[in-house]
Amino acid sequence: MTYLIAVDGGGTSCRAVVADRDGTPLGKGLAGSANITSDMDAARDNIIEAVRLAMREAGLREDRIGESMAVLGLAGANIGDKPSRIAALLPFRMSHIETDARIALQGALGDSDGAVAVIGTGSVFIARNEGRISMVGGWGPIVGDFCSGARLGRTLLEEVLRAYDGLRASSELSSTILARFNGSPSAMVEYAQAAKPRDFASFAPLLFEYGDRGDVIACAILADALRHLEETLQALAGEGDLPFCLLGGLASSYSRRLSPVFQRRQRPPDGNALSGALSMAVSMFGQAREGRQNHG
Image 1: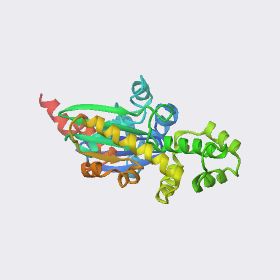
Image 2 (image 1 turned 90 degrees about the vertical axis):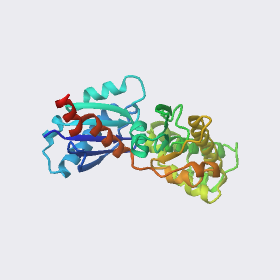
Image 3 (image 1 turned 90 degrees about the horizontal axis):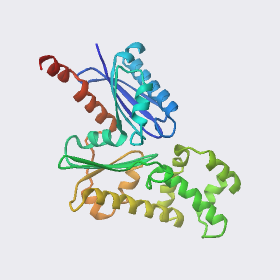
Image 4 (image 1 turned 60 degrees about the vertical axis):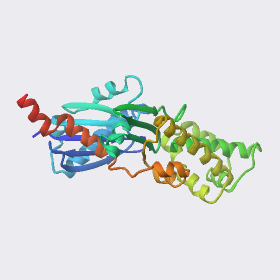
């Protein structure tokens, strides 16, 4: 029997599910980052590890991986030739690579019109409007991903240095962050030079926590991020008022901070990115598809 595999690979973790040809989940697995722009070799290893763990939970031999059909939604799959390069490194019988945004759209909205913002370590926006799909962002935290955890964390460290240099007033948050580096800005700079996106993103929960307390630095950073979030959602909607869903590790933190007009347009997602990848796998490789091909 040929099995289906669905993978949701983000900047912090990679989730996989193995299912039968009807799409019934049999086992799930979790591994580390699968951003194919940040580190393709690590992404490949974590994809395989997550699938291996899913196979184990399903009670299947690992050698069945090579017989399986896979749909993978991966962070960084919108950049250059990355999709074809990662596909060549994977052990599946067939691999279809999508962006993590595309599987999130399918999971959250199915075939309905609307927009999805996926905000975790990175951030990316995607919408379907009268059948036309458009995507914004997903360029990584160096030049984009303005409301992502990685960008928030990097901006926070920048503001801590500005406060240390006397260019702006310090705050409880800036003092807390500097204390983590034993009061040494040099240690913080050395950390930042070697940090990966997920390392910067580790500061995001603290930023939201201090934002709730009214910390001036936290509130300023979050205000900029929220402005970008709402401007991007509006750009995707055009002149209309498309409904939208927020997904990802920071979705709930942003959701309660949206302005009233965006609160009214927000809707809960039907599913998540992994369920979207599985839905696409069933459509492409499932039992019904095989039956249509056999009788076509």
